[in-house]
Amino acid sequence: MATHWKSRRFAARVLKVLARHRAVAAIGAYDASLGPKANAFITTYDTAARYEGTWRKEMTEGRGAMAALLAEINAWKPHVARERPGYDLTTIGDRPAVPEDLIQDGIALAEQLESVAAPWAAAGATALRAKATDAERETDEAAAADAQHSANLTAVRAAQAAFDAELQLFRNTLRATIGRSHPDFQKLRAEKVATTDADDDPAAPAPSPPVAPAPAPPA
Image 1: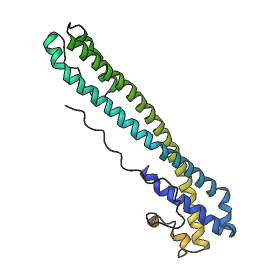
Image 2: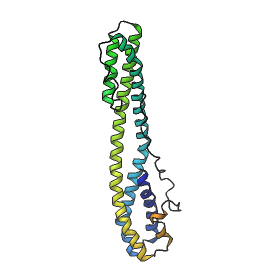
Image 3: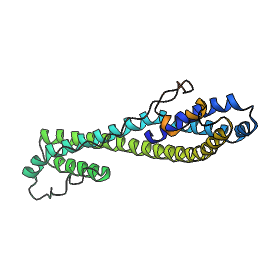
Image 4: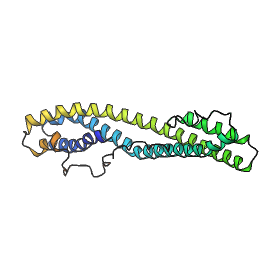
């Protein structure tokens, strides 16, 4: 989303510039093309930006649930190695970044503990199954959020492409009518996007922070 923020700022400025100069026939002619595309991009961008917080939250919770399950698996593997010496533990927890595999491994380890007639083993199996259930729920929710976030970004890119193409034409018309030195032309130059302007939308979402990499699972 950070890469689309500049277009979001320009879209708000464009609407104000268009409103001020629409009496110039060549500029007013953009009412039917640039205006709708700027508004469509603003709506699409803001929808995606508002959802991004949910996406980040769900992704963090999904990674956290997987890390918790892996930690639980690693805590009980030594007990299974002692009590079930014939059981192959080499592949248990060996693919911690794959939710389906890690969840299956947690359940498999729980089943081994359930075959041990000891209260501590039953407690271990219960803990593993609980963590596996949590991981399944949280990673399912993260996957759904990720799919929605991806769809939102696809819509933003399409709306941005339509708006940016029209913006280039609008700049050319402004240059020919009000001139390059006019403040309303200058504020729509790429070099000016980082500078705040009176036409900026105070309700616009702030630029997105960088996406933090997934935390490394416990060894």
